[in-house]
Image (cartoon, rainbow, N blue to C red):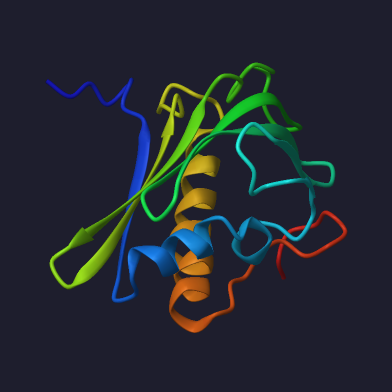
Length: 156
């Protein structure tokens, strides 16, 4: 039985590119999520910070990295300016699973712990859907995503 109150947020992207190309795009975080990321985002056990000025900051750790198959980030710290619960996201895992699906490559993104009961769920759902289905897709397919610009704001 699927309890939607506890179901983790997931979105799936299907593209014609190879798992290797998808993996390279996923790990190019500054190319699709935000140019305003500080720290190493490519080495296992390294930590990095993400910030949208006056809205969202978080600290992530790269906890799993399997070339062409899987990337997992662990949320170590998180702050939203718009939620009462200051612990949302802390301890969540952001999982990117890459696999062949016939002639296409599937990339399944799941934020383990991002559930509808969260205050930020609707905003986070919309944001992740946009980043994955638009910015990451465009980076994979066209070589250019739409990350948040350097300086900490949101894309225009």
